[in-house]
Length: 409
Image 1 (cartoon, rainbow, N blue to C red):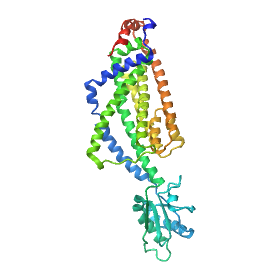
Image 2 (image 1 turned 30 degrees about the horizontal axis):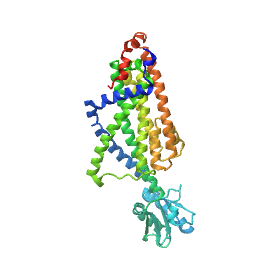
Image 3 (image 1 turned 45 degrees about the vertical axis):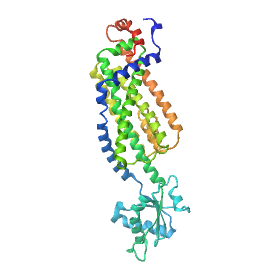
Image 4 (image 1 turned 180 degrees about the horizontal axis):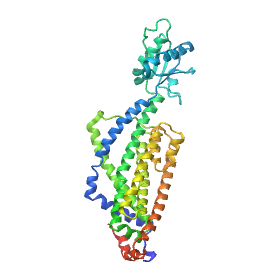
């Protein structure tokens, strides 16, 4: 076959992508595959319940004491006396030396206060979101009563000064959104990435992949298959999103409400789509590389198991770093290619900076390119050495290559 008859990388990838996209999208198996999210929904509901419990346990209990020095020390001492008897029902108290108003103290960056108690022991005042006021009014009254030397059994009334939010409450709310985004991204990737492997297994069994490998550049085969599977995945996600929207309209306020992410919902959703695409291409290129390393279908299925388990590990790595933005663990999760989409989506929920996402998407695109090149090289060596020296394969498909370039199938 003359080199002039070979398709370019982009044209060959487009042919493979169009062929795979149409073959999968219009198959009856794909229609049944669309029913698959019923199982992730159940898993997501269970995980959401567990995550909610973890979130409640992780909510900050630190209350700032902005009183006169004598009253503040009396509050601390009273809290220490009550703690052995009352235990976890009491908040953690920290004396603040700030002379600012309670609302300003509550919004101090880096302090993570859930409430501020001011006033005096006879008339304590609690400044916090309404939810924190409901939870801490009783314990603060108990501590103030214990701190009063004259009548520790008389509980004073606590004056409430509700505010819209605090740094701690806002951070806690956004962590919920970050957890939900990571969970949805992980479930979609694990559900849809398997199509790449199943398609490869089928074509290895009927020798189609060997025909493609000898007719067009192997890089184009990999790239075309990944793009086709990504397109099919977006079709499935669109169908599921429409079904989810219908369920949301029917359920109304019964569904849980997620706080708005730091970047706002439009940008957060757009970044979620971009990170899904990058994560899917990264995982799909690894699955295709596994196909290049395996000689049989059974080996393909066996070697894919470590990658699946590794994907669980990188998800747990990204999930565990949500509460520690900027830490070495979070930076490693953002830089490691397989965990980067999860870690960066969580960062989009908690930080309004845009430049880290541009850098992360560029890095992930580079990793996709490298994974495709390495996987294609491995596959090329394996496939071209199959059969009788590889020449039989090239000669067998030499006449089929022009037809492949002109075919719409």
